[in-house]
Image (cartoon, rainbow, N blue to C red):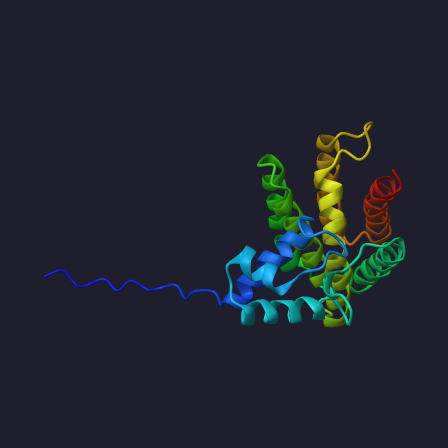
Length: 230
């Protein structure tokens, strides 16, 4: 007789996690608009998930500043304001320069490898025209860069700023913002800049690395300014 083969069952993901991930995607992809009121009944109907998981997901999202709770409005999607956007870019610049200052004196080889993998994921997302996946892969790249610092406070700070940036990244990657700079050119530039950041980090070239990061963030900032003021 042949020995019986045991099939391992993959445990199902908790419904609260499913609800959270679904709502996050809809917020990032702007299916749920900034300042939109998220009614519990609406979410239950749209997602086909019970009230308790929905409530748990909303509590988590509130903790991550993706939604806000107001006494008279209930839960709304966090607005995108000029003030918040300005603060986000300022923070991104400060935190990522801080990562450079700390990481430049450490062995970053493990995280550099992960940065390369993330940039490959960026390329695949571009080729398959999956904007949400591109946003996620770009976030992974910058988080692996932050992890080069091996400093939990810097990593957390970069994560907060980069999470705030996800909706803006979706706008930047999903729209022809500057007619003189087609998306194909923008995508190519992002990938090349990521490669250059990796090379400078590997070669411990601190001045050039800071300049690259500054240019990388400034390109993103200018695209958002054009979008918000057009």
